[in-house]
Amino acid sequence: MARRGHELAAPAAAATTRWNAVARVSSSVATRTGGALGVERGTARAQVALEVGGVAGGAADAMPGVRLTAVPVRACAATGRDLALRACALAEPLWVTGGTGDVTTLLGGSIAGTGRTVVDGVELIYQVGIDLHGNGVDYRWADQAVLTTPWLAVWTGLGVQWEGGP
Image (cartoon, rainbow, N blue to C red; front, top):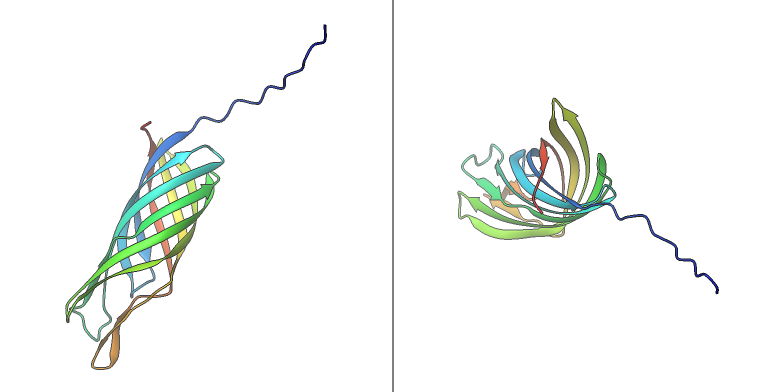
């Protein structure tokens, strides 16, 4: 009687859910500051992530009463864990107050690098990224640009991450 061989695959790495909270500073629209809350699910090699943020910034000195508030939403795919590279789809609804005001949504993508380290039992994350917007808006007063949404915005962030959930 012939024996059949059967190759056993290595067990798949267990997927984990990780949550994070990050403070950010962006080069877009003068300097915008804010933060983001996110969740990622995956293994040490690959993850998917969803992140919702909030940022605010002011106009140039030409019109100090003009403010921008935005809620960037990123859906990402990432590779790596302690040093990770992310590629994201980006939708950024924004509201401009002051002047006549405006509401619009910027659409585009984002590329980011994320590093993780543990300090005294706390998992710290640091991020550097570039947002690329497919559309932009110039807000003008007396034929002078007072607030411009950029095509490209560089940002950096620092935060904490924790594991939990399904």
